[in-house]
Length: 159
Image (cartoon, rainbow, N blue to C red):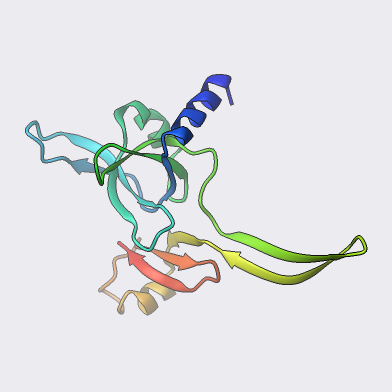
């Protein structure tokens, strides 16, 4: 990682940028502006209950994100309007599941007293899960994604 990249990451961190994971394949999005442009976009999981849908990729970051971005890749989001975000690059870290161990230290000997998982993941559904979570065969499309909590429990479908 170059010094310029480190400086850019620190600047983006100071601006309050978000880090999220790409939760769908990258797709083209038609913006209904006065010019009617096509742009690249992806659904992004920011660790909340709802996934941000069709977040556009900044034109300056399209080469990097289109080359290295796939489902599960960590990305940096920047707020451009009141409630709109844009993907501005690949993140150095990503949201994931964390394993937390609580340790009790007595006389220089550590003893694990509790263990906990935190976070959630977004992944492609298997055939069995499509039938189970998708409402039956034919109702949920093949290639659908879903979010799961740290223990592997189903949260929501992401088409």
